[in-house]
Length: 387
Ligand SMILES: Cc1cc2nc3c(=O)[nH]c(=O)nc-3n(C[C@H](O)[C@H](O)[C@H](O)COP(=O)(O)OP(=O)(O)OC[C@H]3O[C@@H](n4cnc5c(N)ncnc54)[C@H](O)[C@@H]3O)c2cc1C
Image (cartoon, rainbow, N blue to C red; front, side):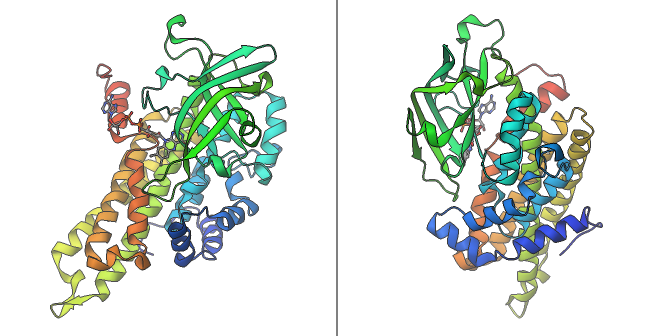
């Protein structure tokens, strides 16, 4: 392992690493080739309690901070795995924890912590509105003790491997609210029940082995008790959870970046062309050194975001910047890794092309790089809102 500074959380890293070591490259490669879900890997992580890191002790979790949770995600990706299969289980429950009633927390959190229930999915994005979330068209209309949901979502991940989903829907039409961010609410949706009574799930084949879906709601009835927090405040609740999501994904990208750099460094030391290791050429060394510097810099911002989050201080700028820097750094590391493996980079058996596809996602989802720029421009630099 190539590190410039002592690693933080060494014991935690060792424990996660030893679990991940039971799932070598061949496992992740086979799952990718079969377009399967890494069931055994996710089960092992759940049983070991790693995915319940952020759930407080009183609800059966380990009560760790975002810093420790980020180490878990980083180590999964650094081992050659892809935390995208299960990261939702780590952070989706935050919405429930912060805004759910005590009764809801008692009902859901212990079962999520034990792994009996998976809360892997969050349904926000819609085909017609994209990033412009306040224009969502999915509605949930109150009818007695139930809400009736109609509409469509797209790119909703892990629905086939989750028991519950947090759903964002409009409860008051956009035309009737004073602020466009109001009038949306969030609900717990029992997915298996919903599939029998108004929810259709259509998987989307995509570049990565990422289980993601189109959802169609036709008069799906949800008990009113499944509303989280106050009606109309759902958008704010979702925003509250984004800093944790962005910081954890930054850590995953850092894990990817380190995987690429470790692999390519070992390869270019070994591969001899024109009578010397290719790693002796500056044209090969410099892009790798550049990616290494960028990954290390992104890591500093990730720790800053974690520290602020864990002290309950505002961290929107740091979480966004960590995600931006880490996604960019891992992508540059991926490019260097693929390039200097030459033709072998394209062979499945080296795993480089798989990780290359996986890490590319984070320039687009869960938030595109342009929207991070827009956030910094508006909220940090005080420039006029551009959209
Ligand atoms: C594999 C995968 C998994 C996903 N999982 C989930 C999930 O579980 N739940 C969920 O709700 N969503 C999920 N998403 C959706 C994801 O969050 C969105 O794809 C992302 O937010 C971008 O939205 P969009 O695709 O509609 O792009 P659009 O909003 O159409 O934007 C396209 C591009 O235009 C640019 N752009 C847009 N607006 C602006 C602007 N104002 N200024 C400058 N540039 C702009 C950006 O570069 C952006 O990448 C997932 C997506 C993918 C691909």
